[in-house]
Length: 241
Image 1 (cartoon, one colour):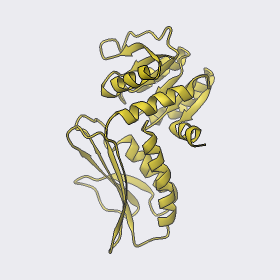
Image 2 (cartoon, rainbow, N blue to C red; image 1 turned 90 degrees about the vertical axis):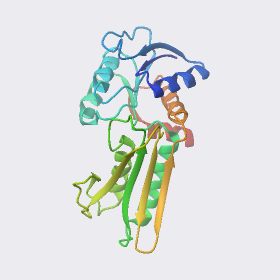
Image 3 (cartoon, rainbow, N blue to C red; image 1 turned 45 degrees about the vertical axis):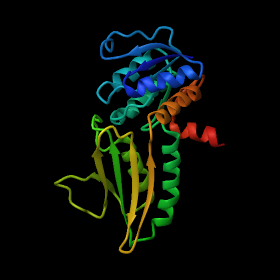
Image 4 (cartoon, rainbow, N blue to C red; image 1 turned 135 degrees about the vertical axis):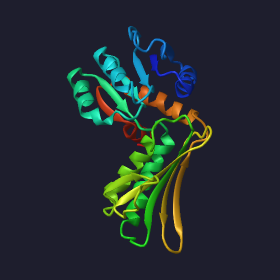
């Protein structure tokens, strides 16, 4: 495939390396320098991993240009319904992910199973901790929010998630998320069930950006020749079924 990389930071460069290894061509690299003027002509697929501020305009440009787009940027989901409609109106192709890592999606599936076991265990309280590099702009991470949403679908006592801060109140109906920013951390997400006598932890830790890059390329390969809106869960099921 001839791929456009929209967002050419550390992740974009890692995606480029994996894509080339798998026989694809990077036809376009979108950076801050050409973000307002880039042309998608000739591109067969776009991978969008820019920023929450620019994601929507990039997604719209891809869909209006007839280019399938895999979106890794987060922070735009308030407009998801509009983007879904635009995809459908244009007979387009979109795959979105708060995290490209196949391992993270296995982590989420494991969390569904554990939460189902813990839903009646009132002696335990659940919380989430996530750790990322100091340059990460959003907190909590999109992955942590998705994790919280998965847990809240199963754990009836948790009605909303809340970011731990100096002003946070430990309301038992809130699923508390601690967001830490440390050095060049690639990403760690930990779900903790703690009781009076013990604790249970389920952890996913990324060792490098290569896992995210491989997932992004796998998503692009999955989306080729498809129409509609997909998620990384569709990619995961494609691989395990």
